[in-house]
Image 1 (spheres, rainbow, N blue to C red):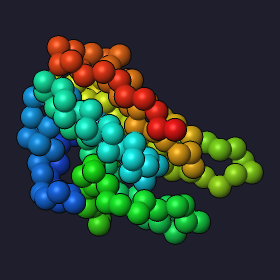
Image 2 (image 1 turned 60 degrees about the vertical axis):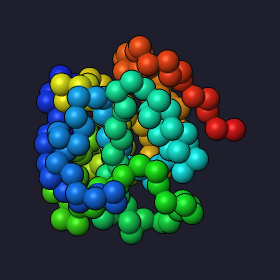
Image 3 (image 1 turned 180 degrees about the vertical axis):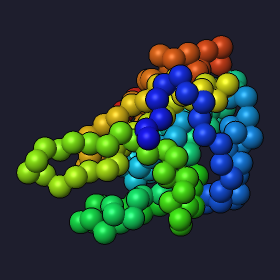
Image 4 (image 1 turned 120 degrees about the vertical axis):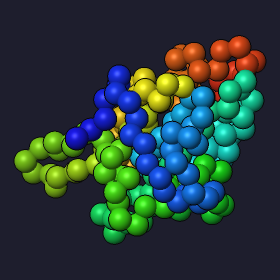
Length: 168
């Protein structure tokens, strides 16, 4: 079942590329963002976004999920050459990814079924999902879009941070 705005974000304990976390404790009292497909974003835009998030009075935490197994076998997309500045969940069983899956996509009767939408979840300090952002598959995404949504939601109020510009 997909997670919807107004619901409490599921808690979990798992390893990440930055060490083990218990999700709700790791978020603390700040805003959070969960990216279901971290590889959709360039390392450059993620780095700029993480630099921006650190300037806020209450830093905004970002977590990327690992690619689902069926996408690892898909035709390869260009991989990022540098390590991601965003912690990536290490979830070999897929249990946590199952908690955070997007809405199943009906691509029509002639297309293969797609069972995993590409989604960004925006979490407020109470761990409530404030908004979800779904986007089409196989697009190169820029983190400045996420910053704009966080700005609109008021996540950066009273901290002096401003939206970042899209990478050229």
